[in-house]
Image (cartoon, rainbow, N blue to C red; front, top):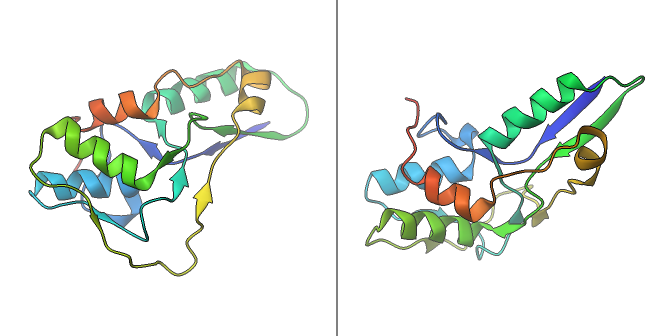
Length: 147
């Protein structure tokens, strides 16, 4: 059995205006309203974002692999990007006159950096993310959202 650990999934069809959809969708929703995306701390927090198309490909690969026992693999791009870079990329792609606002606020329990290693998914599933975060965020800037 293969367990897949998804890291910061984003892409077309994400729900809008909900804190459960992740920071990329929160930023995107703010931009649609003409508001600057609010960036916590100093924006330097690093995350690994993975496009929904890559998540689908990883699932297909996991179903196709026959393995005994149990193992887990990260589904990630393997390309860390800062939260400020995510907000800036979305602003620039949309051509918005607004820029991200660094709030300086901290969220209790938030981890500074969460970066994933894609090596096990590559080794066991032959999976590598095809969509890099910068390319994917440009597409996501105008992708349809739910809700």
